[in-house]
Image (cartoon, rainbow, N blue to C red):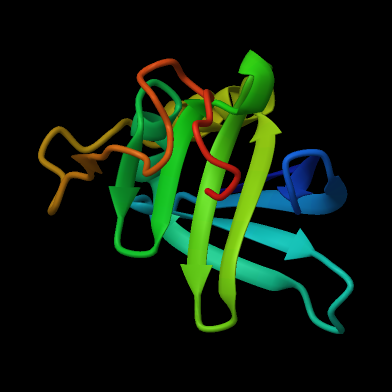
Length: 143
């Protein structure tokens, strides 16, 4: 079974500017360890990121990272957002998405397929450069 959820996320462009990005979350029980986020930007084709489901599950509660994706709960100004720092061939994007919608999607995926008690390589907690201990507090203007 496959589930999807459409939401509006925000690409952070600077401390005071962001732009809305139509985003689709996808989970397929046939591939239980991964999920996809599809961003519909101003590009011709959508931008798709596939990453371990466990990364999102862990990132809803604490900062975590795996390879080119960092996830941190809290977002800027302590809003109820989750920050995703995506590093790819074209550069770096900071995306903020509603924590409640990500959490509901994650819970729905867990109802389909419970979490693997022995994931192959668990995400490691990380510290965010330029951020102090308070979730979402920035001590510099760059992510």
